[in-house]
Image 1 (cartoon, rainbow, N blue to C red):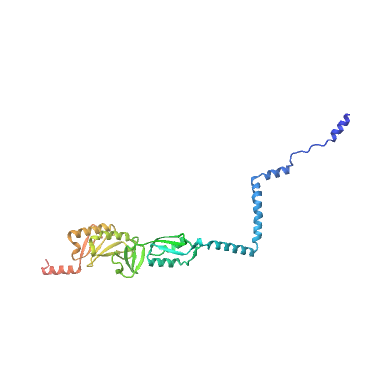
Image 2: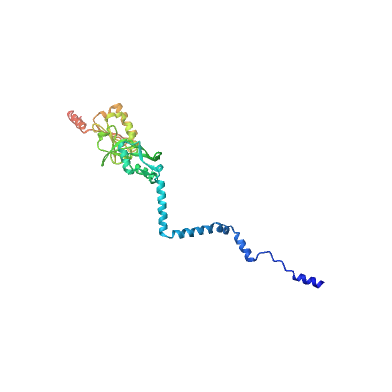
Length: 296
């Protein structure tokens, strides 16, 4: 009996080991790596799509057909009525400046808003001398709106190139054919006068008591001013504190009528020692009178 039981035990099959093999274990661990899982989930499909697209686009005719379809689709969208600009409106500019703006913009309406570079158009408008600031935008209804602020002429500048209108900053506004076209604007002359308009306007304000006798200002050596009056009189001002020097001359004139006499030049270049130069006729008359009085 014992022999029979032992034989039966030997014939019973052994159970398989449930543990994975070493290779299978390493593969499972490798598959659980986040980078590998992401690559299999996204990388493989993308690679397949890339290969498919690359194979499709490898043919030149297919590429040309795709580009043509894209261009046609884009044109169909850009040419829709709601994206078309039909007219241009300009506000804040006189007729002549408005014509110049239309010329520099050179637009052929109707035009798609996608074909308009508003910043570039604004830059072209700002290059015009009479324009101080400009804004360009597209209004509802297909209107290209241009809002302009023009430069205001503050003085007439006479240089070697002729007469020109300049604003309070010295910026060129327009050429001027004749002085009589703007008789009320002050006249500035000399090289560099357009670079010191602010100071010139301060001098002109201080010279108001001189009234209609004032003819203008001349920039001397690009460093100082001469005030020009009628009867060929001049007030030579220093480079430093010219307004105060002019006010001193005007104060003396109001008390002693200095500029009503035969004075050719009032030299204020040396603040500590102002001098007066008489007119040529006055000097000759003075010498004649002295000779008649026996040189006394």
